[in-house]
Length: 89
Image (cartoon, rainbow, N blue to C red):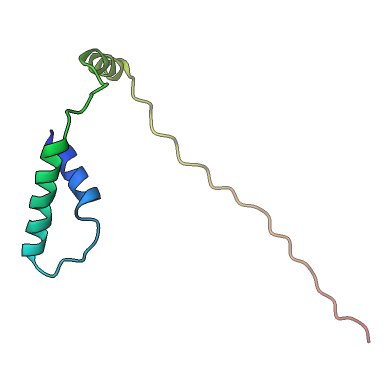
């Protein structure tokens, strides 16, 4: 198993809560998980093939970078002042 995948599983299944009072508890939980996981683990079935990787690399090689978008022009809008007249009593 890759280390990244291993750490992801450990983080989700073992170290989800911060209920440890010391490092001995963390160690105990990690070792228990390791024993349980090694007894039941099966290899991952990778679906991303070498051909898929070659296709992605070819698409990246064909990609032409697009220029960054130009900054929008600032336009001034006319403000209309509303005249208020005192109400006659």
